[in-house]
Image (cartoon, rainbow, N blue to C red; front, side, top):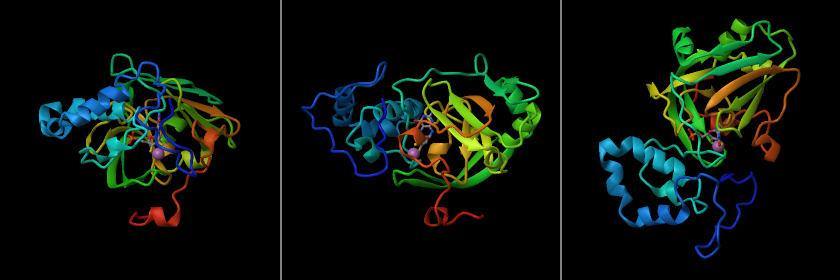
Amino acid sequence: MARKPKPGPEPEPNSDTEPEPEAEGAPVGRRAMLGMLGAGAAGLATAPYLQRKWEDFLAAASQVDASGLTGLLPNPGGFRYYSVVGSVPHKDETNYQLRVTGLVERPRHYTLDHLRAMPQARVVHDVVCTDGWRVEKVPFDGVRLADILDDAGVRSPGAAIRFTCFDGAYSESLTLEQARRSDVLVALNMQDRPISHAHGGPVRLYVAPMYFYKSAKWLSGISVIDKVVPGYWEERGYAVDGWLNDADRRGNAA
Ligand SMILES: Nc1nc2c(c(=O)[nH]1)N[C@H]1C(S)=C(S)[C@@H](COP(=O)(O)O)O[C@H]1N2
Ligand SMILES: [Mo]
């Protein structure tokens, strides 16, 4: 279920009496989430051993939170967790694969170990979502997308890239020129830790100079195609070229 409104007028928040369709497999229902809020969830959040579960809870709760209440919960990182589906499988070194296919000389399947063994690059940049939140100077580490494209050998100079995700629903796009920028990563680490499941781990795209919707979580496919195909949010009104505007670029070195 899409929880994120299109750009433009905000939809009316759902009232408590209005039945709300739930995403299939959503791990936390709206009622359960409101119950937890009432039960002093703030205390839970401060227990360090629960931190990981807390992050998963917030990610799940944000799926059913039409009111934006989860945004008021303690979440010191400043991020919101987004997913267009209710639940996403967990992947790790035993079953994660990144497939590079399409107009390439050498189609590739990367495991996590392969990606970790490649030269790692670091990009530190403000993360900005079109919903109006930002997190300053977030470090991401991983493999430059340009290196992965060179490894596979792009066959067509005017090509575009389509990204797909193991959530089974999200997709993104970049032109080849955008994809070759040095501040575009196939990211393995965020804030000096392996990317958590809630943030799209074990591997997500990070496109630093663009709004965060371009940074596909749970990345599983990179396909070189002959022209840009709009991604999930782009089919729903977002700009295909998601460059941060001048105001949102403030504070970042060019
Ligand atoms: N697979 C997938 N990737 C996604 C999204 C999503 O819903 N699914 N949301 C996008 C949007 S709109 C934003 S702002 C960021 C949010 O990343 P976060 O959940 O790590 O904060 O992921 C982007 N990538
Ligand atoms: Mo976003």
